[in-house]
Image (cartoon, rainbow, N blue to C red; front, side, top):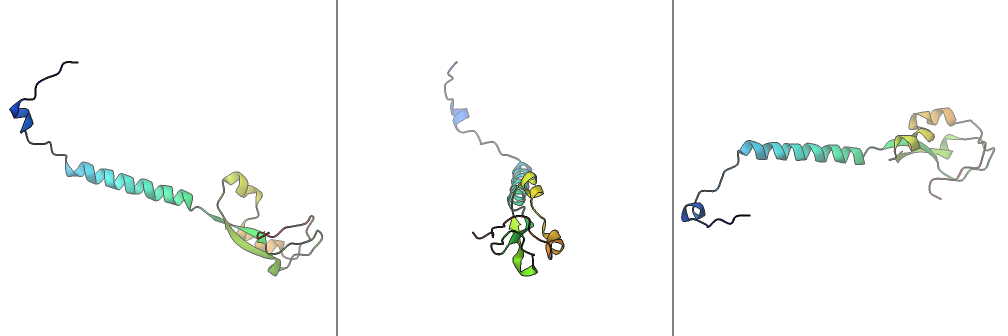
Amino acid sequence: MVATALTPEWAIRQPRRVDGRVGLFLMLATTAGAILFWQSLSDTRGVVVATRDLPAGATLAASDLAVAPLRADDAVYGAEVPADGLGGLVGRQLASRSASSSS
């Protein structure tokens, strides 16, 4: 590497100016990225949960079930009962014991 001497012209030259549009573009791109990232973190869906422990063979009542938010990937969410399926569960019998979401 060749070292060059610092000349007086180089030392007192005016600094380069960056076009303001570049800064504006970077700010808008960063803001858009942050918004998309935040939306991906807060993507929750409602699922049906038991409000109390229920024994096998119990008939489900509306007070036994509630909707709770769940943030999970699609594979996990596919195994859960979505919130809009709550009405179809009332009056059905449980095949196995169900633990409440708070236990």
